[in-house]
Length: 81
Image (cartoon, rainbow, N blue to C red):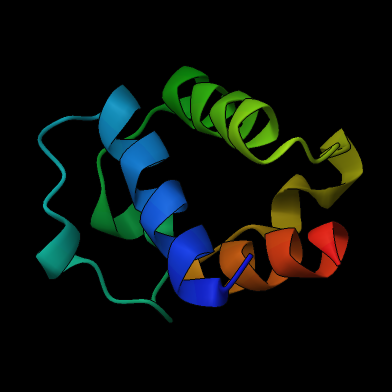
């Protein structure tokens, strides 16, 4: 899966939890949680959604790596290869 496809899937997953998020307003390298208003339960739901969508195990110890869109896309791409 190409990184652009992964990015689109990540954004769709986020919008499934927080429909008010505008994809065009997201900055790929900026901390994601500072850009969108997600509490800890919403953030956990995003991670679960990513797991289900991309069929990638995301251990709790890796959550801290998922800080930006760039980081999430890289993480998922590396685990799908």
